[in-house]
Length: 55
Image (cartoon, rainbow, N blue to C red; front, side):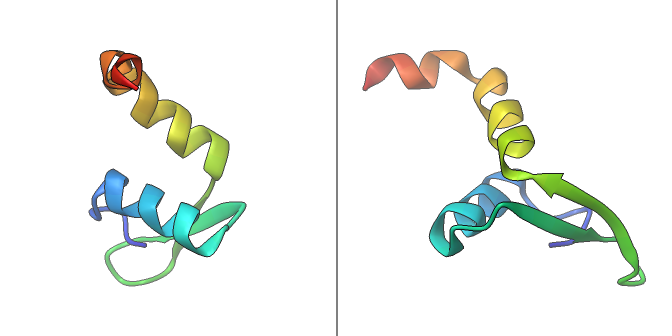
């Protein structure tokens, strides 16, 4: 993934591939960060907490 990629698509990749984390690349494709799955998914849930109450 790159720094400007969609966070929801990153979450789908994590789940689909059962990855523990994602390597994020900058604009020139150098390593920028390693984002743990729990951090990414937690950030997405906190953006829209009511989405989880519909289940």
